[in-house]
Length: 221
Image 1 (spheres, helix red, strand yellow):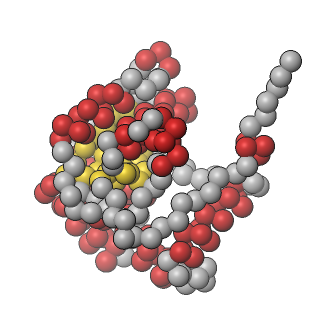
Image 2: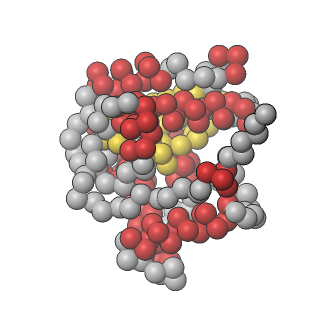
């Protein structure tokens, strides 16, 4: 699989089989992803790759919190600005319409939307998850570096025939993850990432992208 095919076929998969992801494949992917760029090579990311009983326990604890209506953890970073301006507001709204529309859930059915969203905390059935942390004292540039690392991981997973789904949703239940992983106190959970072999029986349309002219300006001599 070449780079273009990896980029074009990568998507946030929301259905996985229970087929185990080999440890050697994950080590190969993460060893290569370590070459992702970062300012002054500080490599601000810290990844925990979790499977088996530890991941089952994380899913269980998150599921119990959902079932009892336990409130989300206090956010340590803002996922979206309180007032999302145009065109970002419209793009987010269009995503929601497509995502929940594909599930047959109307906009006004908030309860059904919440049930669908709860699949995040089961990793959509994936047998492996990556939890990505960053030192909370670092700044926006280092968060950007961490994003480049995560994108590199996702593309390399595609080269191995795997799919993934990055999930900021795990930051809402970071306490449950921390109970199992016990990361150093200075780290904060940026996101989780479900990893596995895609369940092709789960029909989920790929989200479109804005036309090139909306996001790219060519300045030529």
